[in-house]
Image (tube, rainbow over all chains, first blue to last red; front, side, top):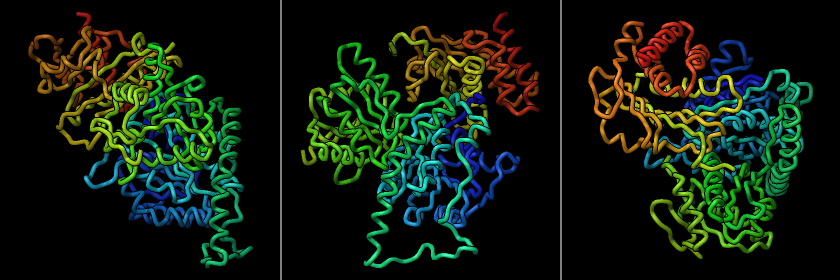
Amino acid sequence: MSKKFLSGNEAFAEGIRLACPQVISAYPITPQTIVVERLSEMVEDGSLSAEYVHVESEHSALSCAIGASAAGARAFTATSSQGLLYMAECLYYASGGRFPIVMMNADRSTALPWNIYGDQRDSLSQLDSGWIQAYAENAQEALDLALMSYKIAEDKRVSTPYMANLDGFVLTHTYETVDIPEREQADKFLPAYETDNRIDFDNPKNMAFSAGPDTNYIFKFKEHEGILAARDVINETEKEFAEIFGREYSGLIEKYRTDDAEYIIVTLGSIAGLCRETADKLRESGVKAGVVRIRYMRPFPNAEIAEVLRNAKAYAVLEKDISFGNEGTVFTNVNSALKKAGVNVSGYNFIGGLGGRNISAGDIENIYNDIINGTDSVNFIGIGGEDNGK
Amino acid sequence: MANSNNTELKEILWLGRGGQGAFTAAKLLGAAHTIDDDNKYALAFPSFGPERRGAPVRAFTKLDTKPVADRSQTEKADYIVIIDDTLYTPQLRGLLKSTGKIIVNSKKEIDGALTFDADSIAAEFRLPTANTIMLGLLVGISGIVTVENAVAAIKGYMPSKIQERNINALQKAVQEVAK
């Protein structure tokens, strides 16, 4: 194991180097560019043996990865924002074809107004595309997700593509200390990709075919089962990861001081650290504050969320997203989890960080105060709230 | 118990113009802080956005003895280091802790700031920019990292052909403070 001072993008690239993809298709877009640049340097210096394909668009980047995966290769690509939206058509081909491609997405706002900074509207708009969606908090988790992602995606129970999301700039461009595992350990953890779901001249089969009304629904059901199976596979993979690398992860969610918490912020990505610090501060003045960080938006942690919020007095969902005309998409998902489990706790939505706007410690303290006192159902930090269907 | 009020956290704000290496200095400081101690943590990040040569840029380094959870931009710095004196304004004091210091690369005296002629040291070592000299001045004034670790960071994270000149310049800057 070696320690280095790296950005989130660089750490993710190190994780991908250890995962040994055989094909990398690359089209640069801020703030993702550094990942594909580092990978091209690794291929150039021989430390990563992969076919590095320069493509002419994001649509082609994912198409190329699908083709590589259909040939039985481990494939990687990366994108962000408008690039993700441009490849949206191919997202469904990848998941429907059960190709366990890994893609890094640098979470960035969507136009218009044009903006290159971080929010999560790009990836959250694609929750229905059939991909596993993970959200990293820091550079170490980014590297570790890169390594774990293939093991989860390629598991035969899952066979589902995997999108690892890193908050644009705040995570992709921030440098911190990262432990880089040794090659032998990585190889032990993640063996080469083997699959029957590939073009094989000795065993020819029809792939990527049409399915009419008589069978289509069965494929869709199987696709749903596959991504749900990732719930167990993620836990198994993290257990094995901890045994080999000594770092532990907590599955679909991460809880912080929630055991006796009365007021809980549910969030995702790199803002969770500031939420934890704010919870610590409030606890000193007697407020029983806690934090839940959602690590996986798909498969969604329904049972885990319901369990952790069951005894709270109120919760906030803080997200860098808005589904116009309704509310933040994470809020919708959290509320559904509670409804299904019969949990009735007051919940409020806080939309922040859009277009890269800073979320301060003061903002987070205000969220706790607002949910203690009650507020509007959907609140734009720095602007105000509105009672949307409350 | 974690407490944001009695932490060891030190925050450094770097100001420069695009091309002057403010972010490189911010990264080197973070690397120096963590390079030989697993119980030290750092974050370094630029003011995010398109990079344009000559445009004002800010960079941030946060140093601590526990993982740095707050990734937001520094609102109160322990040190503000300015590579280009045209970027100095008295209003910067609003971004400084009461005990904080401002260090400026300037041939002129500036009220309320420590000034050093870092450009002359850069010229002496044939360096196009004074970023590692400003790092050396910060190290000399603050002792925030050791000179040895700053040198180790340059060896670890700068291209090999410019390491020696930057190390010599950094050490000269440290001596300059001691004068």
